[in-house]
Image (cartoon, one colour):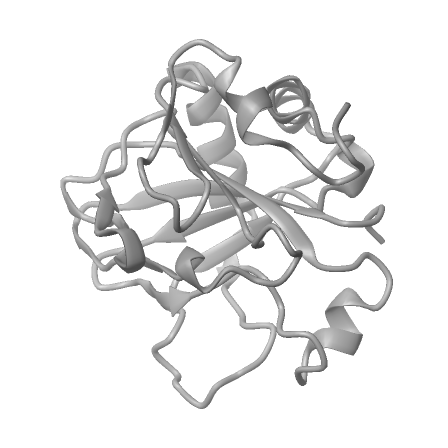
Length: 210
């Protein structure tokens, strides 16, 4: 039985078509065609309707560190409810441990430089973002469209670069077995060179969200 806020390699691999990136440095999984083309299109429309400039939990002084746009998706929308159901079936994580689903939009030249999704204990953003719900456990990201050029997600520590494909899901464990943040999850949403890139991001926490 999975612990609260947790998925596992064994649970994820129990689904057809799930591949694990072959590295002991992190638990990183890929599932093609997780969402249908129609579902992707409906989520893209929601992102376009309510997008805003992306922000950082802790500003590091680099104005160009994250240049995309973000949308906090309304949990009352049917497409979002369908997504939450699919993610629950896939991850085994109780939805109460999930942050609000976010969508991101990247135009040509936009990126999110190398970063991790977990928070540094006792860091400047820990109390604000983690005092109630704890550390981020897992991240699941879904590409909603193909990109004409650029826009890959690069995990430098394992030499893996994943290209956007409509409906493809990536998932990774943000922590080491001892619960500390895994530095090998450092990843880079690389610049879009041609076209527009849309993604969905879902983060889970150790404790119920909010």
